[in-house]
Image 1 (cartoon, rainbow, N blue to C red):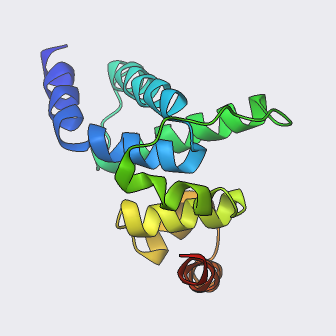
Image 2 (tube, helix red, strand yellow):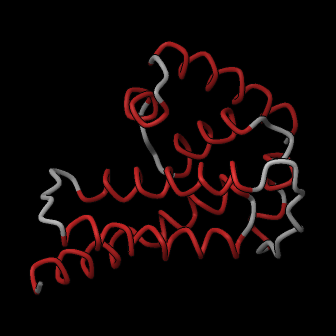
Length: 147
């Protein structure tokens, strides 16, 4: 149990802020982002307790977070999220991100916030690398025009 605890504590220290920011900007809901971050680490704990040994803990955490985000989105379809309290530096970008469809917003967040390249995004989202490049280019142009 100690190696799992050490692995998760280390992963939390290194990746929690990035994963929270990823969740928050994909959902545009701060409280739900915090909840998904918490659930991500709980699910990862369970997964590792079953004897799994991931090659890359960061990739595992992002996969868990993305799965939880999709579960949340499916569970709340048709509902309108209440506006979240937004720190000053994010206040300009969040309203613009709200205008994008979920896939383009996710690609922008993964590329610019999480600093993932197109092949990594494609693998996480089950898209072709070419599709990610096209969507990223289009979303980037739209984002630049709106800011």
